Length: 179
Image 1: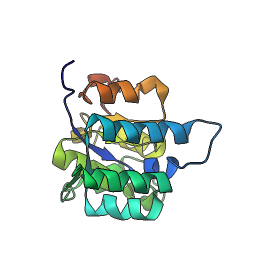
Image 2: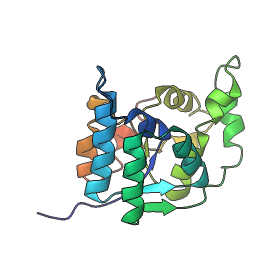
Image 3: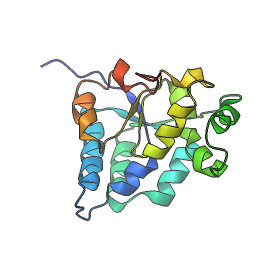
């Protein structure tokens, strides 16, 4: 069997929070745990910025904390600085409902900065930020090619995607099929 291509992935802390050990009716916790386990087992790496580390520290479940320790032990946390993309925040804010509190949008832009800086896909279960980024595509064209995968959305086949080497499939781009 051929070796799977490995990739750096920006993993949102909402996955760390959702991956708790308690059973859930929706299956989100199990999906997030399975996703994290696959990242570890398949030898993908996690992009690790100071903002991502701080968010994980605040929100990670016990399972996710153990996973992070295993990733660190295997040297699979790729520490990097992800500097803000000039003007991105103001353009995203201008593209969305002015009635939204800005922090509802800006709290997760560090994921986008990390993805752009490392040319890595984003794994997040936060549909709200995903929708807000898609709303911004007209004013923020650099978001069009950002790959975004929801580990808890079985329609997106996240485990198959990881096993295939986390390819940059066109249909996973934020700008895919957006008019």
